[in-house]
Length: 258
Image 1 (cartoon, rainbow, N blue to C red):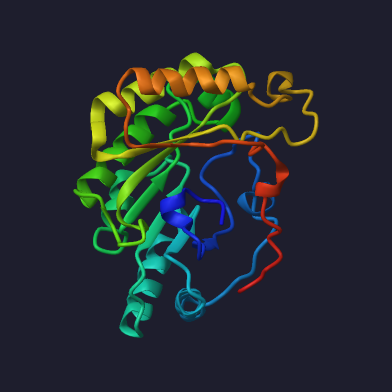
Image 2 (image 1 turned 135 degrees about the vertical axis):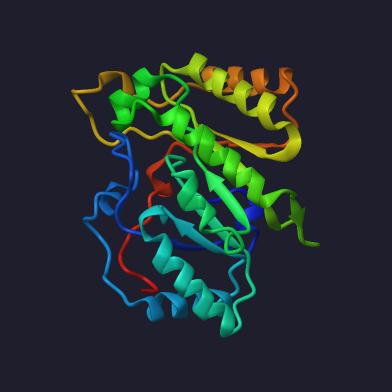
């Protein structure tokens, strides 16, 4: 239920979390699964069944979370499930650090792209995610995503059927980098994409190696970024309100549904 309103709606998004991740973010909220510590090995046929079970439960979409390193398996599972009656839109929910050539394999299989865009500067990208080329790689990936989707559409309930939503999680102390990201996305894509500005950064314990990350962003920082986005003309976007910087956003990863 915790995705953007046009993804979750009232019924919920059918999230399928994949173990492992191409990034090594020191602040990852899903580290139990992103570092491969949680999860089960399943067959491709079982993955296809899971997609259909989520449809039968009333999910608004199939939401593939950190799926990059399983793309061939996912394509096969989607082909199987579609032959068996899967009609839900498919969401590709990723950290943005994607090879464009991998994304090309997904054309015709993915309806909605939901990438992060974490960094503009190489310094925090290397320091916090071990990938100094993050901006270059993510920019090329989003360009490919927009090329594939071409248009945005919603059903009569306001649930997205096709489109691109780019997420940006604001980190403490990097407000200016966040502004540069919002400006880049708006100047490059305008209203062709939605920009989701997220304030839910949550410190995971007290990390002495990164003391600057041991706090939430302030209301003033977040409001300044939102006002900046509005000021440069961003219209298609999402913001978060209330106490979203909470560990309640972290799933249990208890194997439910697998």
